[in-house]
Image (cartoon, rainbow, N blue to C red; front, side, top):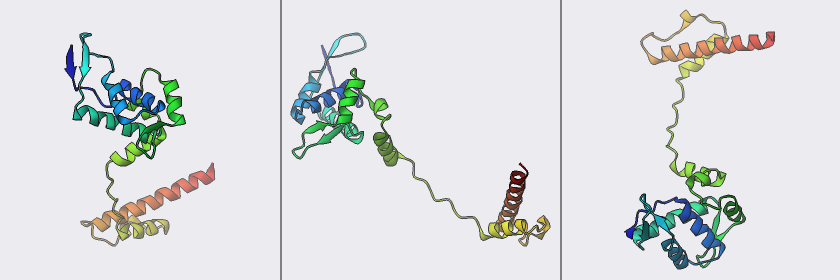
Length: 179
């Protein structure tokens, strides 16, 4: 038999073991012992014995934190994990295991993961005031040649975009009235 610490976080058996242990109100030490007793096989079918290492402990914590984020576990005052009613329902629905893919179907987990890992959005700069002047000019039926800005500056383009948007909006409104 070989030994390994290559037990992947989010593995269905790991999360299922943690959830079942919480259902039985087992402490952290008992949960770790249950995980260590899991029957695992490598690709060739040989049994793998799991070792109690800091890596395995951190993976147990990782899986526990994901189950808490999803609302399947809650921690009691003494630190013992307890199962929620949603956790009980998930045990019934997914008796062969729960992984991050299953947890992503739960809005609480999905929203938390997204809020913590979403790319930061830069604020879009507001258009130049020339855009507003151009929009007003377009609504006022001014001609394109009345753009007051030199053609080689940004304000010229902003005025043109505003003017064009006003004409498009006017056209859409007239089409809506005809329908």
